[in-house]
Image (cartoon, rainbow, N blue to C red):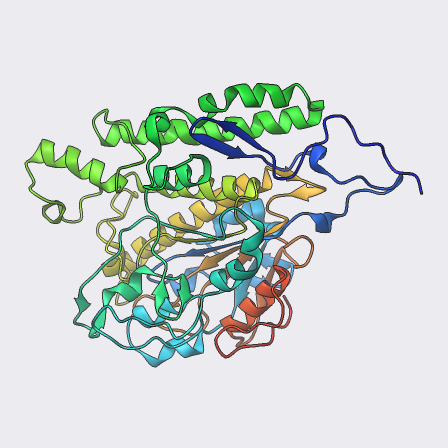
Length: 468
Protein backbone atom coordinates (compact mmCIF):
# COMPACT_ATOMS: atom_id res chain seq x y z
CA UNK A 1 0.00 0.00 0.00
CA UNK A 2 1.33 3.45 -0.93
CA UNK A 3 1.57 6.16 1.70
CA UNK A 4 1.82 9.91 1.54
CA UNK A 5 5.37 11.01 2.02
CA UNK A 6 6.10 12.85 5.25
CA UNK A 7 6.73 16.56 4.66
CA UNK A 8 9.91 18.15 5.93
CA UNK A 9 7.83 20.21 8.36
CA UNK A 10 6.10 17.27 10.01
CA UNK A 11 5.94 18.02 13.75
CA UNK A 12 5.01 16.26 16.98
CA UNK A 13 1.55 16.65 18.54
CA UNK A 14 3.35 17.63 21.74
CA UNK A 15 5.59 20.31 20.24
CA UNK A 16 5.47 23.62 22.10
CA UNK A 17 6.63 27.19 21.67
CA UNK A 18 9.26 27.97 24.28
CA UNK A 19 11.01 30.97 25.76
CA UNK A 20 12.58 31.87 29.08
CA UNK A 21 9.63 31.78 31.46
CA UNK A 22 6.87 30.51 29.18
CA UNK A 23 5.81 27.42 27.26
CA UNK A 24 2.84 27.49 24.87
CA UNK A 25 1.24 24.23 23.86
CA UNK A 26 0.12 24.26 20.23
CA UNK A 27 -3.32 23.63 18.76
CA UNK A 28 -3.81 20.70 16.44
CA UNK A 29 -2.19 21.41 13.07
CA UNK A 30 -2.33 19.45 9.82
CA UNK A 31 1.42 18.98 10.13
CA UNK A 32 0.74 16.89 13.24
CA UNK A 33 -1.44 14.36 11.43
CA UNK A 34 -0.08 10.82 11.08
CA UNK A 35 0.57 9.62 7.55
CA UNK A 36 -2.48 8.03 5.93
CA UNK A 37 -2.93 5.80 2.96
CA UNK A 38 -3.72 7.40 -0.38
CA UNK A 39 -7.45 7.97 -0.68
CA UNK A 40 -8.02 7.98 3.06
CA UNK A 41 -8.85 10.96 5.23
CA UNK A 42 -7.61 11.20 8.79
CA UNK A 43 -10.14 9.52 11.03
CA UNK A 44 -12.29 11.79 13.13
CA UNK A 45 -11.73 9.47 16.04
CA UNK A 46 -8.11 10.61 16.19
CA UNK A 47 -9.35 13.85 17.74
CA UNK A 48 -9.62 13.66 21.56
CA UNK A 49 -12.91 14.20 23.38
CA UNK A 50 -13.02 16.92 26.04
CA UNK A 51 -15.50 17.44 28.88
CA UNK A 52 -16.42 20.56 30.84
CA UNK A 53 -19.06 20.73 33.59
CA UNK A 54 -20.50 24.20 34.21
CA UNK A 55 -22.46 24.64 37.44
CA UNK A 56 -25.11 27.32 37.92
CA UNK A 57 -26.22 27.89 41.55
CA UNK A 58 -29.70 28.47 42.93
CA UNK A 59 -31.81 26.73 40.28
CA UNK A 60 -34.03 28.29 37.59
CA UNK A 61 -37.46 29.78 37.07
CA UNK A 62 -39.18 26.48 36.24
CA UNK A 63 -41.95 27.77 33.96
CA UNK A 64 -39.46 29.55 31.68
CA UNK A 65 -36.80 26.83 31.32
CA UNK A 66 -38.21 23.77 29.54
CA UNK A 67 -38.43 23.90 25.71
CA UNK A 68 -41.69 23.15 23.94
CA UNK A 69 -41.80 20.11 21.69
CA UNK A 70 -39.54 17.09 21.78
CA UNK A 71 -36.86 15.39 19.77
CA UNK A 72 -35.53 17.53 16.94
CA UNK A 73 -38.84 19.39 16.69
CA UNK A 74 -38.54 21.74 19.65
CA UNK A 75 -38.50 25.44 20.42
CA UNK A 76 -36.19 27.02 22.94
CA UNK A 77 -37.75 28.49 26.06
CA UNK A 78 -37.27 32.17 27.02
CA UNK A 79 -34.36 31.37 29.35
CA UNK A 80 -32.69 29.20 26.70
CA UNK A 81 -33.24 31.64 23.82
CA UNK A 82 -29.55 32.77 23.82
CA UNK A 83 -28.70 29.28 22.54
CA UNK A 84 -30.49 29.75 19.21
CA UNK A 85 -27.24 30.03 17.25
CA UNK A 86 -26.04 26.68 18.61
CA UNK A 87 -29.41 24.95 18.83
CA UNK A 88 -28.23 22.16 16.55
CA UNK A 89 -25.27 21.50 18.85
CA UNK A 90 -27.14 20.98 22.13
CA UNK A 91 -29.35 18.44 23.83
CA UNK A 92 -31.74 19.84 26.42
CA UNK A 93 -32.39 16.95 28.82
CA UNK A 94 -35.60 17.03 30.88
CA UNK A 95 -36.88 14.77 33.62
CA UNK A 96 -33.57 13.98 35.33
CA UNK A 97 -33.26 13.64 39.10
CA UNK A 98 -30.26 13.32 41.35
CA UNK A 99 -32.03 11.08 43.85
CA UNK A 100 -29.20 10.70 46.39
CA UNK A 101 -29.16 14.48 46.90
CA UNK A 102 -32.76 14.77 48.07
CA UNK A 103 -32.02 13.24 51.47
CA UNK A 104 -31.04 16.58 52.96
CA UNK A 105 -32.61 20.02 53.02
CA UNK A 106 -31.27 23.14 51.33
CA UNK A 107 -28.68 23.72 48.60
CA UNK A 108 -25.59 22.01 50.00
CA UNK A 109 -26.70 18.42 49.48
CA UNK A 110 -27.49 19.24 45.86
CA UNK A 111 -24.32 21.19 45.06
CA UNK A 112 -21.60 19.02 46.57
CA UNK A 113 -23.16 15.91 45.00
CA UNK A 114 -23.89 17.43 41.57
CA UNK A 115 -21.03 15.49 39.98
CA UNK A 116 -20.82 12.59 42.44
CA UNK A 117 -24.50 11.55 42.63
CA UNK A 118 -24.07 10.56 46.27
CA UNK A 119 -25.33 11.75 49.66
CA UNK A 120 -22.91 13.98 51.56
CA UNK A 121 -22.06 13.49 55.22
CA UNK A 122 -23.79 16.02 57.46
CA UNK A 123 -21.21 18.09 59.35
CA UNK A 124 -20.70 21.59 60.68
CA UNK A 125 -16.92 21.31 60.59
CA UNK A 126 -14.15 20.83 58.06
CA UNK A 127 -14.49 17.02 58.06
CA UNK A 128 -16.47 17.09 54.81
CA UNK A 129 -17.21 14.02 52.73
CA UNK A 130 -19.14 13.66 49.49
CA UNK A 131 -19.08 9.85 49.85
CA UNK A 132 -17.95 9.59 46.26
CA UNK A 133 -15.64 10.87 43.52
CA UNK A 134 -16.89 13.42 40.98
CA UNK A 135 -17.07 12.49 37.30
CA UNK A 136 -14.41 15.01 36.32
CA UNK A 137 -11.92 13.34 38.65
CA UNK A 138 -12.95 9.85 37.57
CA UNK A 139 -12.14 10.98 34.03
CA UNK A 140 -8.95 12.82 35.04
CA UNK A 141 -7.58 9.68 36.65
CA UNK A 142 -7.76 7.88 33.29
CA UNK A 143 -7.50 10.36 30.42
CA UNK A 144 -5.63 13.00 32.44
CA UNK A 145 -2.50 10.91 32.02
CA UNK A 146 -2.42 11.96 28.36
CA UNK A 147 -2.29 15.71 29.02
CA UNK A 148 -0.06 18.15 30.87
CA UNK A 149 -2.86 19.06 33.30
CA UNK A 150 -5.12 16.20 34.42
CA UNK A 151 -7.96 18.68 35.03
CA UNK A 152 -8.79 22.33 35.70
CA UNK A 153 -11.17 23.58 38.40
CA UNK A 154 -12.30 27.16 37.83
CA UNK A 155 -14.85 29.50 39.39
CA UNK A 156 -15.68 33.10 40.26
CA UNK A 157 -16.20 33.16 44.03
CA UNK A 158 -13.85 32.34 46.90
CA UNK A 159 -14.55 29.42 49.23
CA UNK A 160 -17.29 30.17 51.74
CA UNK A 161 -16.66 28.98 55.29
CA UNK A 162 -18.67 28.94 58.50
CA UNK A 163 -21.91 27.19 59.34
CA UNK A 164 -25.30 27.82 57.74
CA UNK A 165 -27.60 27.70 60.74
CA UNK A 166 -30.68 27.39 58.54
CA UNK A 167 -29.66 23.78 57.86
CA UNK A 168 -26.79 23.26 60.34
CA UNK A 169 -24.26 22.41 57.66
CA UNK A 170 -20.83 23.76 56.84
CA UNK A 171 -20.88 26.21 53.95
CA UNK A 172 -17.82 24.45 52.53
CA UNK A 173 -20.16 22.07 50.73
CA UNK A 174 -21.50 24.96 48.69
CA UNK A 175 -18.08 25.88 47.29
CA UNK A 176 -17.09 22.55 45.70
CA UNK A 177 -18.38 20.35 42.90
CA UNK A 178 -15.08 18.56 42.18
CA UNK A 179 -14.00 15.75 44.52
CA UNK A 180 -10.69 13.94 43.97
CA UNK A 181 -11.49 11.60 46.84
CA UNK A 182 -14.65 11.37 48.93
CA UNK A 183 -13.07 13.61 51.58
CA UNK A 184 -10.84 15.70 49.28
CA UNK A 185 -12.70 18.53 47.51
CA UNK A 186 -10.75 20.50 44.90
CA UNK A 187 -11.02 24.29 45.25
CA UNK A 188 -11.78 26.52 42.28
CA UNK A 189 -9.19 28.91 40.92
CA UNK A 190 -11.00 32.26 40.65
CA UNK A 191 -8.16 34.45 39.37
CA UNK A 192 -7.99 34.44 35.54
CA UNK A 193 -4.32 35.44 35.59
CA UNK A 194 -3.32 32.48 37.74
CA UNK A 195 -5.41 30.10 35.61
CA UNK A 196 -3.86 31.54 32.43
CA UNK A 197 -0.33 31.30 33.81
CA UNK A 198 -0.91 27.72 34.85
CA UNK A 199 -1.37 26.97 31.16
CA UNK A 200 1.46 29.02 29.74
CA UNK A 201 4.05 30.22 32.26
CA UNK A 202 6.91 28.27 33.78
CA UNK A 203 7.12 28.50 37.56
CA UNK A 204 9.91 27.56 39.93
CA UNK A 205 9.55 25.13 42.81
CA UNK A 206 8.15 27.96 44.96
CA UNK A 207 5.43 28.71 42.42
CA UNK A 208 6.96 32.00 41.23
CA UNK A 209 7.16 33.03 37.57
CA UNK A 210 10.38 35.02 37.97
CA UNK A 211 11.47 38.08 35.99
CA UNK A 212 9.22 37.21 33.04
CA UNK A 213 6.03 37.57 35.10
CA UNK A 214 5.20 41.00 33.67
CA UNK A 215 5.93 40.06 30.05
CA UNK A 216 3.39 38.84 27.55
CA UNK A 217 3.80 35.12 27.04
CA UNK A 218 3.67 35.75 23.29
CA UNK A 219 6.58 38.16 23.48
CA UNK A 220 8.54 35.51 25.35
CA UNK A 221 7.99 32.83 22.70
CA UNK A 222 7.99 35.17 19.68
CA UNK A 223 11.26 33.92 18.18
CA UNK A 224 10.18 30.30 18.46
CA UNK A 225 6.79 31.14 16.91
CA UNK A 226 8.41 32.88 13.91
CA UNK A 227 10.71 29.94 13.39
CA UNK A 228 7.81 27.49 13.40
CA UNK A 229 5.71 29.66 11.05
CA UNK A 230 8.38 29.43 8.36
CA UNK A 231 8.12 25.64 8.29
CA UNK A 232 4.31 25.38 8.05
CA UNK A 233 1.95 25.23 5.12
CA UNK A 234 -0.51 28.08 4.52
CA UNK A 235 -3.43 26.39 6.25
CA UNK A 236 -1.40 25.70 9.37
CA UNK A 237 0.05 29.20 9.32
CA UNK A 238 -3.48 30.57 9.46
CA UNK A 239 -4.42 28.22 12.32
CA UNK A 240 -1.36 29.22 14.30
CA UNK A 241 -2.05 32.92 13.75
CA UNK A 242 -5.66 32.46 14.90
CA UNK A 243 -4.49 30.68 18.03
CA UNK A 244 -1.79 33.21 18.93
CA UNK A 245 -4.23 36.08 18.43
CA UNK A 246 -6.69 34.36 20.79
CA UNK A 247 -3.97 34.08 23.43
CA UNK A 248 -3.09 37.74 22.92
CA UNK A 249 -6.75 38.75 23.22
CA UNK A 250 -7.11 37.04 26.58
CA UNK A 251 -3.94 38.75 27.83
CA UNK A 252 -5.20 42.14 26.69
CA UNK A 253 -8.54 41.67 28.40
CA UNK A 254 -6.97 40.56 31.66
CA UNK A 255 -4.75 43.60 31.76
CA UNK A 256 -7.66 45.84 30.80
CA UNK A 257 -9.75 44.52 33.70
CA UNK A 258 -6.83 44.84 36.09
CA UNK A 259 -6.25 48.42 34.99
CA UNK A 260 -9.90 49.35 35.53
CA UNK A 261 -10.26 47.53 38.83
CA UNK A 262 -6.89 48.24 40.37
CA UNK A 263 -6.49 51.88 39.39
CA UNK A 264 -3.70 51.02 36.96
CA UNK A 265 -2.13 48.28 39.08
CA UNK A 266 -1.04 45.28 37.02
CA UNK A 267 -2.77 41.97 37.59
CA UNK A 268 0.31 40.01 38.59
CA UNK A 269 0.31 36.23 38.73
CA UNK A 270 1.37 36.34 42.37
CA UNK A 271 -1.79 38.15 43.47
CA UNK A 272 -4.00 35.86 45.51
CA UNK A 273 -7.10 36.92 43.60
CA UNK A 274 -8.51 39.64 41.42
CA UNK A 275 -10.89 40.45 44.22
CA UNK A 276 -7.99 41.48 46.44
CA UNK A 277 -6.78 43.99 43.87
CA UNK A 278 -10.26 45.38 43.48
CA UNK A 279 -10.83 45.51 47.23
CA UNK A 280 -7.64 47.52 47.65
CA UNK A 281 -8.82 50.05 45.08
CA UNK A 282 -12.32 50.33 46.61
CA UNK A 283 -10.94 50.53 50.14
CA UNK A 284 -8.69 53.40 49.09
CA UNK A 285 -11.61 55.22 47.48
CA UNK A 286 -14.22 54.61 50.18
CA UNK A 287 -12.20 54.20 53.36
CA UNK A 288 -13.63 50.73 53.97
CA UNK A 289 -11.40 48.72 56.29
CA UNK A 290 -12.09 45.26 54.92
CA UNK A 291 -14.06 43.39 52.30
CA UNK A 292 -16.92 42.67 54.72
CA UNK A 293 -17.69 46.38 54.85
CA UNK A 294 -18.24 46.38 51.10
CA UNK A 295 -21.45 44.42 51.55
CA UNK A 296 -22.97 43.12 48.34
CA UNK A 297 -21.47 45.91 46.20
CA UNK A 298 -20.49 44.58 42.79
CA UNK A 299 -16.74 44.00 42.97
CA UNK A 300 -15.94 42.81 39.49
CA UNK A 301 -17.34 42.92 35.99
CA UNK A 302 -19.13 39.61 36.35
CA UNK A 303 -19.62 39.00 32.64
CA UNK A 304 -15.99 39.64 31.74
CA UNK A 305 -14.76 37.56 34.67
CA UNK A 306 -16.83 34.58 33.53
CA UNK A 307 -15.86 34.97 29.89
CA UNK A 308 -12.17 35.18 30.67
CA UNK A 309 -12.44 31.90 32.55
CA UNK A 310 -14.35 30.34 29.67
CA UNK A 311 -11.76 31.51 27.15
CA UNK A 312 -9.04 29.96 29.30
CA UNK A 313 -10.95 26.67 29.28
CA UNK A 314 -11.26 26.91 25.49
CA UNK A 315 -7.52 27.54 25.13
CA UNK A 316 -6.81 24.56 27.38
CA UNK A 317 -9.02 22.28 25.27
CA UNK A 318 -7.78 23.74 21.98
CA UNK A 319 -4.16 22.94 22.86
CA UNK A 320 -5.04 19.62 24.50
CA UNK A 321 -3.41 20.89 27.70
CA UNK A 322 -6.29 19.23 29.53
CA UNK A 323 -9.40 17.37 28.48
CA UNK A 324 -11.34 17.84 31.72
CA UNK A 325 -12.56 21.01 33.41
CA UNK A 326 -15.19 22.22 35.84
CA UNK A 327 -16.52 25.73 36.31
CA UNK A 328 -18.71 27.22 39.04
CA UNK A 329 -20.61 30.36 38.06
CA UNK A 330 -21.06 30.84 41.80
CA UNK A 331 -21.27 29.01 45.10
CA UNK A 332 -24.44 27.48 46.47
CA UNK A 333 -26.52 30.08 48.32
CA UNK A 334 -24.52 32.69 46.41
CA UNK A 335 -25.61 36.20 47.27
CA UNK A 336 -23.81 37.69 44.25
CA UNK A 337 -25.41 41.03 43.44
CA UNK A 338 -26.96 41.02 39.96
CA UNK A 339 -27.94 44.66 39.93
CA UNK A 340 -25.68 45.09 36.89
CA UNK A 341 -28.54 43.55 34.88
CA UNK A 342 -31.35 45.88 33.81
CA UNK A 343 -34.42 45.24 35.91
CA UNK A 344 -32.60 43.30 38.63
CA UNK A 345 -32.00 44.59 42.13
CA UNK A 346 -30.41 42.40 44.77
CA UNK A 347 -28.61 39.14 45.38
CA UNK A 348 -29.01 35.89 43.49
CA UNK A 349 -29.99 33.64 46.39
CA UNK A 350 -32.60 35.97 47.86
CA UNK A 351 -34.17 36.52 44.43
CA UNK A 352 -34.30 32.75 43.84
CA UNK A 353 -36.57 32.51 46.90
CA UNK A 354 -39.23 34.33 44.93
CA UNK A 355 -42.30 33.03 46.82
CA UNK A 356 -44.07 33.13 43.45
CA UNK A 357 -43.99 36.91 43.44
CA UNK A 358 -44.20 38.11 39.84
CA UNK A 359 -41.52 40.81 40.13
CA UNK A 360 -39.13 38.43 41.85
CA UNK A 361 -39.76 35.76 39.24
CA UNK A 362 -38.98 38.20 36.43
CA UNK A 363 -35.67 39.09 38.07
CA UNK A 364 -34.90 35.42 38.63
CA UNK A 365 -35.49 34.77 34.93
CA UNK A 366 -33.12 37.59 33.93
CA UNK A 367 -30.38 36.07 36.07
CA UNK A 368 -31.00 32.61 34.57
CA UNK A 369 -30.88 34.07 31.06
CA UNK A 370 -27.58 35.79 31.81
CA UNK A 371 -26.10 32.42 32.80
CA UNK A 372 -27.35 30.89 29.56
CA UNK A 373 -25.81 33.76 27.57
CA UNK A 374 -22.39 32.98 29.03
CA UNK A 375 -22.81 29.29 28.23
CA UNK A 376 -23.76 30.21 24.66
CA UNK A 377 -20.66 32.40 24.44
CA UNK A 378 -18.38 29.47 25.26
CA UNK A 379 -20.14 27.13 22.84
CA UNK A 380 -19.88 29.62 19.98
CA UNK A 381 -16.18 30.17 20.67
CA UNK A 382 -15.56 26.44 20.51
CA UNK A 383 -17.66 25.99 17.38
CA UNK A 384 -15.55 28.60 15.58
CA UNK A 385 -12.34 26.58 16.06
CA UNK A 386 -11.74 23.98 13.31
CA UNK A 387 -10.33 20.67 14.44
CA UNK A 388 -9.77 17.75 12.13
CA UNK A 389 -12.87 17.23 10.02
CA UNK A 390 -15.10 19.04 12.51
CA UNK A 391 -14.65 21.70 15.20
CA UNK A 392 -13.70 21.84 18.86
CA UNK A 393 -17.31 21.80 20.05
CA UNK A 394 -18.11 18.76 17.91
CA UNK A 395 -15.29 16.93 19.68
CA UNK A 396 -16.40 17.90 23.20
CA UNK A 397 -19.13 17.51 25.82
CA UNK A 398 -20.03 20.73 27.64
CA UNK A 399 -22.49 20.16 30.48
CA UNK A 400 -24.49 23.07 31.94
CA UNK A 401 -27.04 23.00 34.72
CA UNK A 402 -27.92 23.21 38.39
CA UNK A 403 -28.45 20.84 41.27
CA UNK A 404 -32.00 22.03 41.97
CA UNK A 405 -35.00 22.80 39.80
CA UNK A 406 -36.45 25.82 41.57
CA UNK A 407 -34.56 27.89 44.11
CA UNK A 408 -37.75 28.55 46.02
CA UNK A 409 -38.62 24.88 46.54
CA UNK A 410 -35.14 23.25 46.38
CA UNK A 411 -36.72 20.59 44.15
CA UNK A 412 -34.44 17.78 42.98
CA UNK A 413 -36.74 16.39 40.30
CA UNK A 414 -36.49 17.54 36.68
CA UNK A 415 -33.33 19.50 37.36
CA UNK A 416 -32.08 21.81 34.57
CA UNK A 417 -29.47 20.07 32.40
CA UNK A 418 -28.08 20.76 28.92
CA UNK A 419 -25.35 18.80 27.18
CA UNK A 420 -23.64 20.42 24.21
CA UNK A 421 -21.23 18.93 21.69
CA UNK A 422 -21.19 15.62 19.88
CA UNK A 423 -18.27 13.87 21.66
CA UNK A 424 -16.68 13.19 18.27
CA UNK A 425 -19.85 11.81 16.70
CA UNK A 426 -20.88 9.72 19.69
CA UNK A 427 -23.83 11.88 20.82
CA UNK A 428 -26.98 13.03 19.06
CA UNK A 429 -27.53 16.79 19.24
CA UNK A 430 -30.12 19.36 18.17
CA UNK A 431 -32.95 17.98 20.26
CA UNK A 432 -34.97 18.05 23.44
CA UNK A 433 -34.69 14.70 25.22
CA UNK A 434 -37.41 14.05 27.80
CA UNK A 435 -36.20 11.13 29.90
CA UNK A 436 -39.49 10.76 31.76
CA UNK A 437 -37.70 10.34 35.07
CA UNK A 438 -34.10 9.33 34.40
CA UNK A 439 -31.17 9.66 36.78
CA UNK A 440 -28.37 12.19 36.51
CA UNK A 441 -25.87 9.47 37.45
CA UNK A 442 -26.88 7.44 34.40
CA UNK A 443 -26.18 10.43 32.14
CA UNK A 444 -22.73 10.68 33.67
CA UNK A 445 -22.01 6.99 33.09
CA UNK A 446 -22.75 7.57 29.41
CA UNK A 447 -20.55 10.67 29.28
CA UNK A 448 -17.62 8.86 30.86
CA UNK A 449 -18.00 6.02 28.38
CA UNK A 450 -17.66 8.52 25.52
CA UNK A 451 -14.48 9.85 27.08
CA UNK A 452 -13.05 6.37 26.91
CA UNK A 453 -13.51 5.62 30.63
CA UNK A 454 -14.91 2.11 30.67
CA UNK A 455 -16.31 -0.22 33.34
CA UNK A 456 -17.10 2.56 35.75
CA UNK A 457 -19.99 3.73 37.85
CA UNK A 458 -21.03 7.05 39.30
CA UNK A 459 -22.29 6.78 42.84
CA UNK A 460 -24.55 3.74 42.73
CA UNK A 461 -25.28 4.06 39.00
CA UNK A 462 -23.59 1.78 36.48
CA UNK A 463 -25.78 1.92 33.36
CA UNK A 464 -25.98 4.77 30.90
CA UNK A 465 -29.06 6.92 30.27
CA UNK A 466 -31.19 5.63 27.43
CA UNK A 467 -31.46 7.83 24.40
CA UNK A 468 -28.30 9.90 24.63
